[in-house]
Length: 491
Image 1 (cartoon, rainbow, N blue to C red):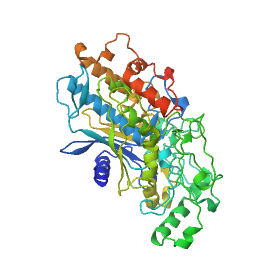
Image 2: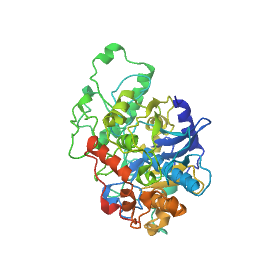
Image 3: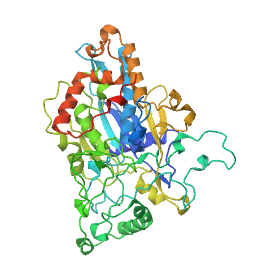
Image 4: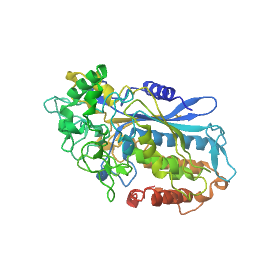
Protein backbone atom coordinates (compact mmCIF):
# COMPACT_ATOMS: atom_id res chain seq x y z
CA UNK A 1 0.00 0.00 0.00
CA UNK A 2 1.23 3.48 -0.87
CA UNK A 3 2.10 5.86 1.98
CA UNK A 4 -0.42 8.69 1.53
CA UNK A 5 1.58 11.24 3.54
CA UNK A 6 4.77 10.47 1.66
CA UNK A 7 2.93 10.90 -1.64
CA UNK A 8 1.63 14.28 -0.48
CA UNK A 9 5.11 15.37 0.68
CA UNK A 10 6.63 14.54 -2.69
CA UNK A 11 3.98 16.55 -4.52
CA UNK A 12 4.16 19.61 -2.26
CA UNK A 13 7.98 19.55 -2.40
CA UNK A 14 7.89 19.40 -6.20
CA UNK A 15 5.89 22.63 -6.32
CA UNK A 16 8.22 24.35 -3.86
CA UNK A 17 11.16 23.52 -6.14
CA UNK A 18 9.60 25.37 -9.09
CA UNK A 19 9.95 29.07 -9.94
CA UNK A 20 7.43 31.30 -8.16
CA UNK A 21 5.70 32.45 -11.33
CA UNK A 22 2.03 31.52 -11.30
CA UNK A 23 1.88 30.66 -7.61
CA UNK A 24 -0.93 32.06 -5.45
CA UNK A 25 -0.22 35.12 -3.33
CA UNK A 26 -0.06 33.80 0.24
CA UNK A 27 -3.00 34.90 2.34
CA UNK A 28 -4.97 36.30 -0.60
CA UNK A 29 -5.17 33.66 -3.34
CA UNK A 30 -5.86 29.96 -3.12
CA UNK A 31 -5.43 27.11 -5.56
CA UNK A 32 -5.48 23.34 -5.85
CA UNK A 33 -2.66 20.95 -6.66
CA UNK A 34 -2.69 17.59 -8.42
CA UNK A 35 0.09 15.30 -9.61
CA UNK A 36 0.86 12.02 -11.34
CA UNK A 37 3.55 9.87 -9.77
CA UNK A 38 5.45 6.95 -11.26
CA UNK A 39 6.50 4.14 -9.00
CA UNK A 40 8.51 0.94 -9.29
CA UNK A 41 10.42 -1.35 -6.95
CA UNK A 42 13.17 1.25 -6.47
CA UNK A 43 11.53 4.68 -6.18
CA UNK A 44 8.41 6.81 -6.44
CA UNK A 45 8.69 10.17 -8.18
CA UNK A 46 6.45 12.95 -9.43
CA UNK A 47 6.38 12.99 -13.25
CA UNK A 48 3.70 15.64 -13.72
CA UNK A 49 2.22 18.35 -11.51
CA UNK A 50 -0.52 20.91 -11.99
CA UNK A 51 -2.22 23.73 -10.12
CA UNK A 52 -5.39 25.56 -11.11
CA UNK A 53 -9.08 26.12 -10.41
CA UNK A 54 -10.63 27.50 -13.61
CA UNK A 55 -11.97 26.65 -17.04
CA UNK A 56 -13.20 28.76 -19.94
CA UNK A 57 -16.75 29.31 -21.10
CA UNK A 58 -17.96 27.47 -24.19
CA UNK A 59 -17.99 30.55 -26.45
CA UNK A 60 -14.24 30.92 -25.96
CA UNK A 61 -13.40 27.39 -27.10
CA UNK A 62 -11.33 27.41 -30.27
CA UNK A 63 -11.80 25.32 -33.45
CA UNK A 64 -8.02 25.47 -33.86
CA UNK A 65 -7.28 23.52 -30.67
CA UNK A 66 -5.03 26.32 -29.44
CA UNK A 67 -6.87 27.20 -26.21
CA UNK A 68 -6.58 25.24 -22.97
CA UNK A 69 -10.24 24.71 -22.10
CA UNK A 70 -9.94 23.19 -18.62
CA UNK A 71 -7.33 24.39 -16.13
CA UNK A 72 -8.40 22.51 -13.03
CA UNK A 73 -5.35 21.02 -11.33
CA UNK A 74 -6.37 17.40 -12.01
CA UNK A 75 -6.67 18.06 -15.75
CA UNK A 76 -3.40 20.01 -15.87
CA UNK A 77 -1.58 17.14 -14.13
CA UNK A 78 -3.00 14.54 -16.48
CA UNK A 79 -2.21 16.54 -19.63
CA UNK A 80 1.32 17.14 -18.39
CA UNK A 81 1.64 13.39 -17.94
CA UNK A 82 0.66 12.95 -21.60
CA UNK A 83 3.65 15.15 -22.52
CA UNK A 84 5.86 12.93 -20.37
CA UNK A 85 4.53 9.71 -21.91
CA UNK A 86 4.95 11.08 -25.45
CA UNK A 87 8.63 11.77 -24.73
CA UNK A 88 9.09 8.30 -23.25
CA UNK A 89 7.51 6.68 -26.31
CA UNK A 90 9.66 8.86 -28.59
CA UNK A 91 12.75 7.49 -26.86
CA UNK A 92 11.46 3.95 -27.14
CA UNK A 93 10.65 4.05 -30.87
CA UNK A 94 14.00 5.75 -31.55
CA UNK A 95 15.92 2.89 -29.97
CA UNK A 96 16.73 4.69 -26.72
CA UNK A 97 15.96 3.69 -23.15
CA UNK A 98 12.56 4.41 -21.66
CA UNK A 99 11.91 4.08 -17.94
CA UNK A 100 8.23 3.54 -18.73
CA UNK A 101 7.80 1.39 -21.86
CA UNK A 102 9.14 -1.82 -23.38
CA UNK A 103 8.08 -3.64 -26.58
CA UNK A 104 4.96 -5.80 -26.42
CA UNK A 105 4.16 -8.95 -28.35
CA UNK A 106 2.02 -7.06 -30.86
CA UNK A 107 3.85 -5.31 -33.65
CA UNK A 108 4.05 -1.55 -33.20
CA UNK A 109 2.68 -1.72 -29.65
CA UNK A 110 4.31 -1.02 -26.29
CA UNK A 111 3.54 -1.89 -22.69
CA UNK A 112 4.68 -0.77 -19.26
CA UNK A 113 8.04 -1.89 -17.97
CA UNK A 114 7.64 -4.66 -15.34
CA UNK A 115 6.82 -3.22 -11.93
CA UNK A 116 5.97 0.28 -13.19
CA UNK A 117 2.66 1.84 -12.14
CA UNK A 118 1.15 5.29 -11.75
CA UNK A 119 -0.53 7.02 -8.82
CA UNK A 120 -2.66 10.15 -8.76
CA UNK A 121 -2.64 12.82 -6.06
CA UNK A 122 -5.03 15.73 -5.58
CA UNK A 123 -4.91 18.20 -2.69
CA UNK A 124 -8.72 18.35 -2.48
CA UNK A 125 -11.53 16.00 -3.36
CA UNK A 126 -12.21 16.40 -7.10
CA UNK A 127 -15.04 18.76 -8.06
CA UNK A 128 -18.39 17.18 -8.78
CA UNK A 129 -19.92 14.12 -7.16
CA UNK A 130 -16.89 13.25 -5.00
CA UNK A 131 -17.21 16.60 -3.20
CA UNK A 132 -20.82 16.05 -2.07
CA UNK A 133 -19.76 14.87 1.37
CA UNK A 134 -21.81 14.68 4.59
CA UNK A 135 -20.70 17.25 7.13
CA UNK A 136 -19.17 15.74 10.24
CA UNK A 137 -17.11 16.94 13.15
CA UNK A 138 -14.35 14.39 12.58
CA UNK A 139 -10.66 15.44 12.74
CA UNK A 140 -10.35 14.91 8.98
CA UNK A 141 -12.93 17.66 8.46
CA UNK A 142 -11.70 20.39 10.79
CA UNK A 143 -13.58 23.18 9.03
CA UNK A 144 -16.30 23.50 6.39
CA UNK A 145 -15.08 24.84 3.07
CA UNK A 146 -14.58 28.59 2.97
CA UNK A 147 -16.80 30.57 0.63
CA UNK A 148 -15.65 30.74 -2.96
CA UNK A 149 -15.29 34.33 -4.10
CA UNK A 150 -14.94 35.81 -7.54
CA UNK A 151 -11.34 36.22 -8.58
CA UNK A 152 -9.81 39.32 -10.16
CA UNK A 153 -13.07 41.25 -10.42
CA UNK A 154 -12.98 45.02 -10.50
CA UNK A 155 -11.82 47.12 -7.61
CA UNK A 156 -14.88 48.03 -5.57
CA UNK A 157 -14.58 49.51 -2.09
CA UNK A 158 -11.80 47.14 -1.16
CA UNK A 159 -9.35 48.63 -3.65
CA UNK A 160 -7.63 47.00 -6.58
CA UNK A 161 -7.42 43.20 -6.50
CA UNK A 162 -4.57 43.01 -9.02
CA UNK A 163 -1.10 42.05 -7.92
CA UNK A 164 1.22 45.01 -7.56
CA UNK A 165 3.15 44.02 -10.65
CA UNK A 166 -0.08 44.03 -12.66
CA UNK A 167 -1.36 47.51 -11.70
CA UNK A 168 -1.19 49.66 -14.85
CA UNK A 169 0.63 52.95 -14.80
CA UNK A 170 -1.36 56.16 -14.61
CA UNK A 171 0.15 57.51 -17.80
CA UNK A 172 -0.75 56.58 -21.37
CA UNK A 173 -0.72 52.86 -22.10
CA UNK A 174 2.44 51.88 -23.89
CA UNK A 175 1.68 48.22 -24.48
CA UNK A 176 -1.30 45.98 -24.97
CA UNK A 177 -3.02 44.62 -21.90
CA UNK A 178 -2.08 41.09 -21.02
CA UNK A 179 -4.60 38.40 -21.83
CA UNK A 180 -4.53 37.10 -18.26
CA UNK A 181 -5.78 40.50 -17.07
CA UNK A 182 -8.81 40.50 -19.37
CA UNK A 183 -11.39 39.01 -17.03
CA UNK A 184 -14.44 41.02 -17.98
CA UNK A 185 -17.97 39.73 -17.58
CA UNK A 186 -17.68 38.15 -21.02
CA UNK A 187 -14.22 36.58 -20.85
CA UNK A 188 -13.52 35.69 -17.23
CA UNK A 189 -12.78 32.02 -16.62
CA UNK A 190 -14.87 29.93 -14.30
CA UNK A 191 -13.83 29.32 -10.72
CA UNK A 192 -13.75 25.86 -9.29
CA UNK A 193 -17.04 25.67 -7.47
CA UNK A 194 -16.85 22.78 -5.01
CA UNK A 195 -15.66 24.80 -2.02
CA UNK A 196 -18.63 26.99 -1.19
CA UNK A 197 -19.55 27.25 2.46
CA UNK A 198 -22.46 25.02 3.36
CA UNK A 199 -24.41 25.83 6.49
CA UNK A 200 -26.64 23.57 8.57
CA UNK A 201 -30.13 23.87 7.18
CA UNK A 202 -31.50 25.34 10.42
CA UNK A 203 -29.21 28.36 9.99
CA UNK A 204 -31.53 29.89 7.35
CA UNK A 205 -28.61 29.81 4.83
CA UNK A 206 -29.93 27.30 2.34
CA UNK A 207 -31.59 27.71 -1.03
CA UNK A 208 -31.42 31.49 -1.12
CA UNK A 209 -27.81 31.66 -0.02
CA UNK A 210 -26.10 33.90 -2.57
CA UNK A 211 -22.47 34.22 -3.62
CA UNK A 212 -22.38 37.75 -2.15
CA UNK A 213 -23.74 36.53 1.17
CA UNK A 214 -21.13 33.77 1.18
CA UNK A 215 -18.35 36.30 0.73
CA UNK A 216 -19.62 38.45 3.58
CA UNK A 217 -19.65 35.53 6.01
CA UNK A 218 -16.09 34.33 5.43
CA UNK A 219 -14.55 36.11 8.40
CA UNK A 220 -17.42 35.18 10.71
CA UNK A 221 -17.29 31.53 9.61
CA UNK A 222 -13.52 31.41 10.09
CA UNK A 223 -13.71 32.81 13.59
CA UNK A 224 -16.56 30.48 14.47
CA UNK A 225 -14.62 27.49 13.16
CA UNK A 226 -11.53 28.39 15.17
CA UNK A 227 -13.66 28.58 18.32
CA UNK A 228 -15.23 25.25 17.43
CA UNK A 229 -11.86 23.58 16.99
CA UNK A 230 -10.74 24.83 20.42
CA UNK A 231 -14.03 24.08 22.19
CA UNK A 232 -15.97 21.35 20.36
CA UNK A 233 -19.72 21.53 21.00
CA UNK A 234 -21.13 18.96 23.35
CA UNK A 235 -23.55 16.31 22.25
CA UNK A 236 -26.51 18.42 23.31
CA UNK A 237 -25.36 21.20 21.03
CA UNK A 238 -25.07 18.83 18.07
CA UNK A 239 -28.38 17.06 18.61
CA UNK A 240 -30.40 19.97 17.26
CA UNK A 241 -28.52 20.24 13.98
CA UNK A 242 -30.03 18.90 10.78
CA UNK A 243 -27.52 16.88 8.70
CA UNK A 244 -26.02 18.80 5.79
CA UNK A 245 -23.50 18.18 3.02
CA UNK A 246 -20.55 20.00 1.55
CA UNK A 247 -21.74 21.34 -1.77
CA UNK A 248 -20.31 21.42 -5.25
CA UNK A 249 -20.69 24.23 -7.75
CA UNK A 250 -20.60 21.76 -10.65
CA UNK A 251 -23.97 21.67 -12.43
CA UNK A 252 -25.93 18.57 -13.45
CA UNK A 253 -25.66 17.87 -17.18
CA UNK A 254 -28.82 18.68 -19.16
CA UNK A 255 -31.31 15.89 -19.73
CA UNK A 256 -30.83 14.08 -16.45
CA UNK A 257 -31.62 14.48 -12.77
CA UNK A 258 -31.41 18.03 -11.44
CA UNK A 259 -30.38 19.14 -7.96
CA UNK A 260 -33.49 19.32 -5.72
CA UNK A 261 -31.93 22.30 -3.84
CA UNK A 262 -33.71 21.20 -0.66
CA UNK A 263 -32.29 22.09 2.75
CA UNK A 264 -29.64 19.83 4.26
CA UNK A 265 -28.73 16.54 2.61
CA UNK A 266 -31.47 17.01 0.02
CA UNK A 267 -29.67 19.87 -1.69
CA UNK A 268 -27.86 17.75 -4.33
CA UNK A 269 -28.58 14.73 -6.48
CA UNK A 270 -25.71 12.24 -6.21
CA UNK A 271 -24.12 9.91 -8.72
CA UNK A 272 -24.86 12.17 -11.70
CA UNK A 273 -22.62 13.70 -14.35
CA UNK A 274 -21.80 17.37 -13.82
CA UNK A 275 -20.19 20.18 -15.79
CA UNK A 276 -17.87 22.68 -14.17
CA UNK A 277 -19.53 25.84 -12.93
CA UNK A 278 -20.00 28.95 -14.99
CA UNK A 279 -20.70 32.54 -14.04
CA UNK A 280 -23.16 33.64 -16.68
CA UNK A 281 -21.91 31.46 -19.51
CA UNK A 282 -21.89 27.67 -19.02
CA UNK A 283 -18.85 25.53 -19.66
CA UNK A 284 -18.64 22.22 -21.52
CA UNK A 285 -15.99 20.74 -19.21
CA UNK A 286 -17.11 17.69 -17.25
CA UNK A 287 -16.26 17.64 -13.55
CA UNK A 288 -12.94 16.21 -12.38
CA UNK A 289 -14.84 13.45 -10.58
CA UNK A 290 -16.39 12.38 -13.88
CA UNK A 291 -13.05 12.50 -15.70
CA UNK A 292 -11.35 10.37 -13.04
CA UNK A 293 -14.22 7.87 -13.32
CA UNK A 294 -13.76 7.75 -17.08
CA UNK A 295 -10.01 7.23 -16.75
CA UNK A 296 -10.67 4.21 -14.51
CA UNK A 297 -12.23 2.46 -17.53
CA UNK A 298 -10.65 4.00 -20.63
CA UNK A 299 -7.26 4.75 -19.07
CA UNK A 300 -5.68 8.15 -18.67
CA UNK A 301 -3.56 7.88 -21.83
CA UNK A 302 -6.33 9.08 -24.17
CA UNK A 303 -7.18 8.07 -27.72
CA UNK A 304 -3.96 9.13 -29.45
CA UNK A 305 -1.53 7.26 -27.21
CA UNK A 306 -3.79 4.22 -27.35
CA UNK A 307 -2.55 3.71 -30.91
CA UNK A 308 0.83 2.73 -29.44
CA UNK A 309 -0.20 0.86 -26.30
CA UNK A 310 -1.17 -2.77 -25.92
CA UNK A 311 -3.08 -1.97 -22.75
CA UNK A 312 -4.66 1.18 -21.32
CA UNK A 313 -2.86 2.94 -18.46
CA UNK A 314 -4.67 3.16 -15.12
CA UNK A 315 -3.96 4.84 -11.80
CA UNK A 316 -3.38 2.16 -9.19
CA UNK A 317 -4.03 4.61 -6.35
CA UNK A 318 -5.75 7.96 -5.87
CA UNK A 319 -4.58 9.98 -2.85
CA UNK A 320 -6.44 13.04 -1.57
CA UNK A 321 -4.84 15.66 0.69
CA UNK A 322 -6.27 16.85 3.98
CA UNK A 323 -9.74 18.32 3.35
CA UNK A 324 -13.38 17.33 3.90
CA UNK A 325 -13.31 13.69 2.78
CA UNK A 326 -15.41 10.54 2.74
CA UNK A 327 -14.03 7.29 1.42
CA UNK A 328 -17.59 6.03 0.92
CA UNK A 329 -18.44 9.05 -1.24
CA UNK A 330 -15.18 8.74 -3.20
CA UNK A 331 -15.99 5.09 -3.88
CA UNK A 332 -19.51 5.99 -5.01
CA UNK A 333 -18.23 8.72 -7.30
CA UNK A 334 -15.12 7.08 -8.79
CA UNK A 335 -15.87 3.35 -8.66
CA UNK A 336 -19.53 2.37 -8.26
CA UNK A 337 -20.87 4.29 -11.24
CA UNK A 338 -18.72 2.31 -13.70
CA UNK A 339 -18.32 -1.01 -11.87
CA UNK A 340 -20.96 -2.78 -14.00
CA UNK A 341 -19.46 -1.92 -17.42
CA UNK A 342 -18.77 -5.03 -19.51
CA UNK A 343 -17.85 -6.10 -23.05
CA UNK A 344 -14.77 -3.90 -23.23
CA UNK A 345 -12.25 -4.61 -26.01
CA UNK A 346 -8.91 -6.27 -25.30
CA UNK A 347 -6.55 -3.99 -23.38
CA UNK A 348 -9.32 -2.21 -21.45
CA UNK A 349 -10.91 -3.11 -18.13
CA UNK A 350 -12.78 -1.61 -15.21
CA UNK A 351 -9.79 -0.74 -13.00
CA UNK A 352 -10.86 0.97 -9.78
CA UNK A 353 -7.99 2.63 -7.90
CA UNK A 354 -7.15 2.21 -4.24
CA UNK A 355 -8.48 5.26 -2.39
CA UNK A 356 -6.36 6.91 0.32
CA UNK A 357 -6.25 10.19 2.19
CA UNK A 358 -3.21 12.06 3.50
CA UNK A 359 -3.15 14.00 6.77
CA UNK A 360 -1.11 16.79 5.10
CA UNK A 361 -2.87 19.92 3.84
CA UNK A 362 -1.78 22.00 0.85
CA UNK A 363 -0.40 25.31 2.09
CA UNK A 364 -2.26 27.21 -0.66
CA UNK A 365 -5.60 25.54 0.05
CA UNK A 366 -8.64 27.75 0.50
CA UNK A 367 -8.81 26.90 4.20
CA UNK A 368 -5.14 27.72 4.80
CA UNK A 369 -5.42 30.92 2.79
CA UNK A 370 -8.30 32.04 5.02
CA UNK A 371 -6.21 31.37 8.13
CA UNK A 372 -3.28 33.40 6.75
CA UNK A 373 -5.43 36.24 5.39
CA UNK A 374 -4.88 39.83 6.57
CA UNK A 375 -7.53 42.53 6.26
CA UNK A 376 -5.18 44.73 4.25
CA UNK A 377 -5.02 42.09 1.48
CA UNK A 378 -8.60 42.64 0.32
CA UNK A 379 -10.86 39.78 -0.70
CA UNK A 380 -9.66 36.21 -0.94
CA UNK A 381 -9.88 34.86 -4.50
CA UNK A 382 -8.84 31.81 -6.51
CA UNK A 383 -5.50 32.22 -8.25
CA UNK A 384 -5.99 33.12 -11.92
CA UNK A 385 -2.90 31.25 -13.12
CA UNK A 386 -2.36 27.52 -13.63
CA UNK A 387 1.08 25.90 -13.36
CA UNK A 388 2.16 22.77 -15.20
CA UNK A 389 5.42 20.95 -14.65
CA UNK A 390 6.32 17.61 -16.16
CA UNK A 391 9.49 15.55 -16.33
CA UNK A 392 10.51 16.36 -19.91
CA UNK A 393 13.80 17.70 -21.22
CA UNK A 394 12.48 20.78 -23.02
CA UNK A 395 10.20 23.42 -21.48
CA UNK A 396 9.05 21.41 -18.46
CA UNK A 397 7.18 24.41 -16.96
CA UNK A 398 4.10 25.90 -18.59
CA UNK A 399 2.18 28.70 -16.82
CA UNK A 400 -1.20 29.68 -18.25
CA UNK A 401 -4.14 32.01 -17.61
CA UNK A 402 -7.47 32.17 -19.43
CA UNK A 403 -6.44 29.27 -21.64
CA UNK A 404 -3.26 30.94 -22.97
CA UNK A 405 0.32 31.33 -21.84
CA UNK A 406 0.53 33.59 -18.82
CA UNK A 407 1.47 37.16 -19.71
CA UNK A 408 0.79 37.13 -23.46
CA UNK A 409 -0.77 40.13 -25.18
CA UNK A 410 -3.65 40.15 -27.64
CA UNK A 411 -1.16 40.91 -30.40
CA UNK A 412 0.22 37.35 -30.35
CA UNK A 413 -3.08 35.49 -29.94
CA UNK A 414 -3.43 32.85 -32.63
CA UNK A 415 0.33 32.31 -32.84
CA UNK A 416 2.54 29.67 -31.26
CA UNK A 417 3.74 32.24 -28.70
CA UNK A 418 0.33 32.32 -27.06
CA UNK A 419 -0.29 28.58 -26.89
CA UNK A 420 -0.03 26.45 -23.80
CA UNK A 421 2.07 23.34 -24.30
CA UNK A 422 -0.92 21.41 -22.94
CA UNK A 423 -3.51 22.55 -25.48
CA UNK A 424 -4.89 20.00 -27.94
CA UNK A 425 -2.94 21.41 -30.88
CA UNK A 426 0.44 21.24 -29.14
CA UNK A 427 -0.13 17.71 -27.86
CA UNK A 428 -1.31 16.66 -31.33
CA UNK A 429 1.85 18.08 -32.90
CA UNK A 430 3.93 16.18 -30.35
CA UNK A 431 2.05 13.02 -31.25
CA UNK A 432 2.66 13.58 -34.98
CA UNK A 433 6.35 14.00 -34.19
CA UNK A 434 6.25 10.61 -32.49
CA UNK A 435 4.60 9.05 -35.56
CA UNK A 436 7.25 10.59 -37.82
CA UNK A 437 10.03 9.23 -35.59
CA UNK A 438 8.59 5.71 -35.91
CA UNK A 439 9.80 3.66 -38.84
CA UNK A 440 6.84 3.11 -41.21
CA UNK A 441 7.19 -0.68 -40.90
CA UNK A 442 7.15 -0.39 -37.10
CA UNK A 443 4.07 1.79 -36.85
CA UNK A 444 0.86 0.38 -35.36
CA UNK A 445 -1.57 -0.82 -38.05
CA UNK A 446 -4.06 1.85 -37.04
CA UNK A 447 -1.58 4.56 -38.10
CA UNK A 448 -0.76 3.26 -41.59
CA UNK A 449 -3.66 4.85 -43.43
CA UNK A 450 -2.77 7.68 -45.80
CA UNK A 451 -6.14 9.32 -45.12
CA UNK A 452 -5.32 10.37 -41.57
CA UNK A 453 -5.00 14.14 -41.44
CA UNK A 454 -6.88 15.94 -38.68
CA UNK A 455 -6.95 15.57 -34.92
CA UNK A 456 -10.44 14.08 -35.31
CA UNK A 457 -9.16 11.52 -37.86
CA UNK A 458 -6.43 10.25 -35.56
CA UNK A 459 -8.75 10.01 -32.57
CA UNK A 460 -11.39 8.09 -34.51
CA UNK A 461 -8.76 5.73 -35.96
CA UNK A 462 -7.95 4.55 -32.44
CA UNK A 463 -10.64 1.91 -32.84
CA UNK A 464 -10.20 -0.07 -29.61
CA UNK A 465 -10.33 3.12 -27.56
CA UNK A 466 -13.46 4.26 -29.39
CA UNK A 467 -15.11 0.87 -28.83
CA UNK A 468 -14.33 1.07 -25.10
CA UNK A 469 -15.74 4.59 -24.98
CA UNK A 470 -18.95 3.44 -26.68
CA UNK A 471 -19.42 0.73 -24.04
CA UNK A 472 -18.77 3.17 -21.19
CA UNK A 473 -21.05 5.77 -22.76
CA UNK A 474 -23.96 3.40 -23.33
CA UNK A 475 -23.73 1.51 -20.03
CA UNK A 476 -22.69 4.15 -17.50
CA UNK A 477 -22.62 7.69 -18.91
CA UNK A 478 -25.29 8.04 -21.64
CA UNK A 479 -25.66 11.76 -20.87
CA UNK A 480 -21.96 12.53 -21.32
CA UNK A 481 -21.97 15.29 -23.98
CA UNK A 482 -20.38 14.42 -27.31
CA UNK A 483 -17.53 16.64 -28.46
CA UNK A 484 -18.40 19.04 -31.23
CA UNK A 485 -16.62 17.71 -34.30
CA UNK A 486 -16.14 21.26 -35.62
CA UNK A 487 -13.77 21.90 -32.70
CA UNK A 488 -11.60 18.90 -33.56
CA UNK A 489 -10.86 19.29 -37.28
CA UNK A 490 -7.54 21.12 -36.86
CA UNK A 491 -4.20 19.69 -37.97
